[in-house]
Structure formats: C-alpha cells, structure tokens
Length: 103
Image (cartoon, rainbow, N blue to C red):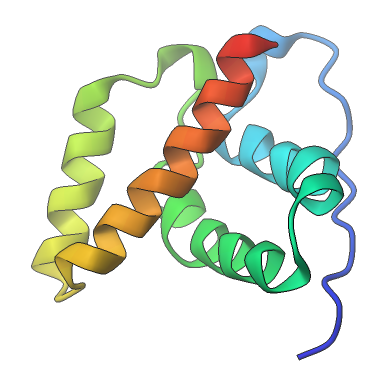
C-alpha cells in the first residue's frame, strides 16, 4: 500500500456544526499524519473509514454522548468483530476526542 494521501477537510466556520466524521478526517489530516508512522496512519484511516464514520460520523461532535459510543461498540461486536478490534476502534476514537477537547 502506498503512502496515504492527505484528506482535505474544509475548516468549519461554525465548529458547533462540525460532525464527528468531519472532526475525525480533520484530526487524521492535520494531526495523525504529522505525528504518526505511515503504517499507523493507514490503520487509523481504515478504522475511521470502515467503522467510525459509518457508525457515528453524522452526529454533531458537540452532541456525541457516551451512549452513542456504547451503541456503536455493541453493534460492532454484534457484527462479529473481536473485542480486540473493538478496543482498537475505541482507542482511535478516544484519541481523536481527547484532541478535540484540548482544542
């Protein structure tokens, strides 16, 4: 697999309207690609694309609740993902959300 291509995410004029998906792609393009190894970038991008954006990407970031995350993780386990994979998905999401809170 080649080097990940940068994703251009337009800056939101009103961050209160920013969706979880928009934030995840911004986080990937502005922070993960700057600070992480290529393999890690690819793994995180795959997790965001395959699980997080389809599962909770449309929710406004400011309205995301722990129950949204719990529901997503239960759905993923129900779809047959291993607890280890769900834990990795949780870790990626947690890192992105910690960064959002800091900003």
